[in-house]
Image (cartoon, rainbow, N blue to C red; front, side):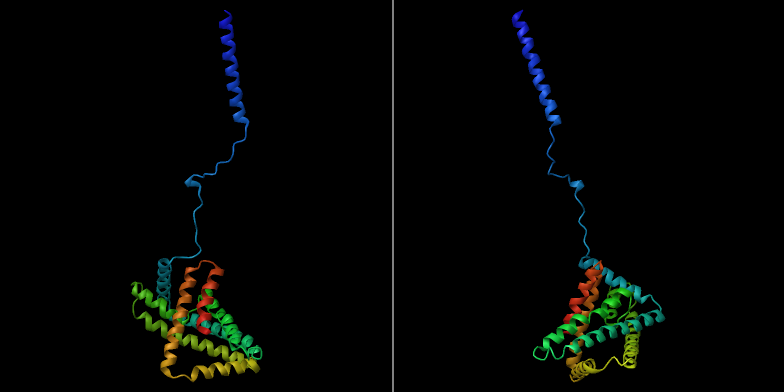
Length: 244
């Protein structure tokens, strides 16, 4: 009887100890798990399209432009030419004002001019303007992808070229009427004009191809970027490269 009584006491003590351990483990705070299930991982998002998606958007932009009427294309081209004037005038005013400071270092004036000039393409691309240099790439891309007829290429290039020229001339007349092209600004404008017009046709043509290539790259990279800051960076580097 005594042995049976002691055995029951040992079993009760063992059960009590086990219950205490269970309660203690439940009350003890558990360390957070460092392993997250795959389903809860956040999806990686990008603010920049890949080259394939950017090219498709590039061609779609050309197709959309080819479907517009002549008056719309002309209107968008005219104010694009005016915006080119805004960027050029800004660059000449600021860069011309540091002519004395850049006498011993002409690169300084070129850098300032190139840093400010891209504002014109930023205004054009973000407001829907039509620039002949950019249209010469987007529309052929649409034609190659069979999203537009080949006749859209000469039509849009001609309309946008005329519109850009008229817009630039209107801006130049307004600047002259306001006496803004004077002093150091006028000196830099004359210097730039002489430098561009003094080259022969072949050299000017080759340089024009290279410059337009960089403009088209700016349009392409701007289409890749999906936010304002990204578009500014995408436009700034290629345009400042060809201006400098």
